[in-house]
Image (cartoon, rainbow, N blue to C red):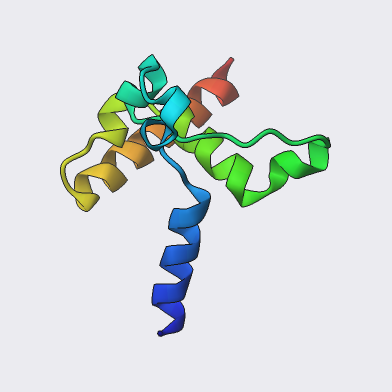
Length: 91
């Protein structure tokens, strides 16, 4: 198995959809496509990819998360991040 394939499998294991966890499958977050954010005991644990990655994904607007192609996802994400930083700087 190449390193790239191993890495993608590893990332997929860290990003678990709400819909795949049986008690959460009926929640609205599962229908929106949210990812499970594991609980941590320390604030340092919140910096781990397994926590920060799903939290960042869940904070994106649904039109970005449901983009039909990779190029449209990148374009929407870039626009979203630009507008977010622009309004923070101008306020």
